Length: 380
Image (tube, rainbow, N blue to C red; front, side):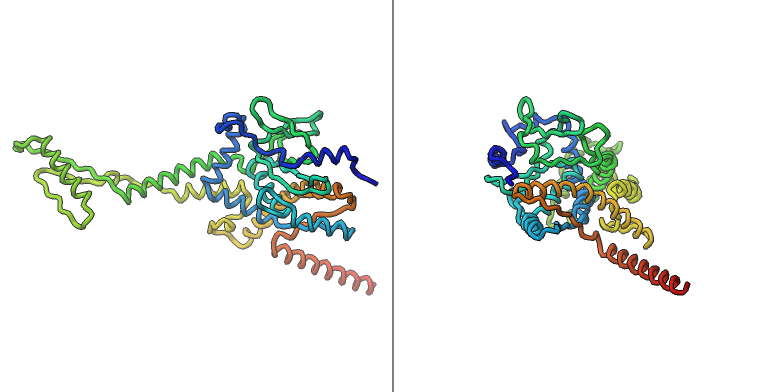
C-alpha cells in the first residue's frame, strides 16, 4: 500500500531549501523587524553582557542529557538510529542531538523555537533539519485557536510558509490565549542592569587607581611680584614634563605655596560584595541552577546541595517533556516518508550518577521489603 500519491510526492520534492530562511531586501533589514525584535535582541545582549547567565543556559542544555530511540521492530529501530546519527543539521552539523540542543537554547533564550524538516528530493525520508532564526519568523493563529501558522517576515506583508506540516513550533510556558512563550530570562534585565552598573563603577575606580589624576594648586603670596598667570603656566609646564618622563625619577621643583593632591583619593569606596551577591542570588534563583555549578562558592550544607540538585532535576525533566514531542514529530515524519508505521519510544538517559545511586537504593529497599513480607506470610 502506497502511503503517498504522486501529487504529494511532487509537493515534498519541491522543498529543496529551508523555506524558513531569512529574507533580506537591503542592508538595513533590521528596520523591517517588529517590536518583538527589541526584546529578543535584549535577551541576546543580556547573555553576552552577563557571563553567568550565558553559562547557566549552556549548562542547562548540557545537563538535559542525551536520548536514544528504540522500537520493538528491529528494522524501524535501525532506521531511527541511522537517522539520529547522520541527519544533516544546518550547514555544518550532523545528528538529531545537535538540532535538539540548538532548539532548546533558542527555547530558553527567546521562549520559542522553530525547526524545519527538509525531505529528500524523492520524498523518501528527511534529509536535513534546520533551526530557524526566531527573529525572521512570526507566529499567528490558524483557522482556530488550536492551530498555529508560521509566517516569514518580509518587506511589506509577511509570507505564509507553504509547507506547515514540515515545521515544528514550541513555546515555553505560554500565557493563556497567547502565541508568545516565556523565556527563562524574563525578569532578569532589571537586576542585570544594576549588576552592570556596579561592575562598570568598579572598572572606573580601578582605572582611576591605576591611572590617577592630580590637582596642582598654586596660591600666590602677598609679596609675590611675579605674574600669577605666568607662574601657573610655568608650574603646569614643569608638572606635565615630570608626568611624561618615563626614564626614571624626575624632580619637580617650584617656588611658592604649591599643593599637590590626588583627585578622588579622599573619597570612600562603596561596598560592592554584598549588593553583587544579592543580585547573583536573584539571577541564580530565576535560572534554577545550583550556585556551585556556576563556580559560586557560597556556604551551604550537604543537605542544601542535595535539595538544590533535586530541584534542578525536576527542571530538567520539564525541559525533556517539552522536547520529547518535537523529537517524536521529526522521527515520525521520517518514518512515514519511508513507509514505516511501527511505534517507537524516546528514552532519555539518567541526568546524573546520583540518580543511578538513588534508583539502586530504592530497588534495594523494595526488595528487602518484599523479602520481609514473604517471611511474615510464611510464618503466618
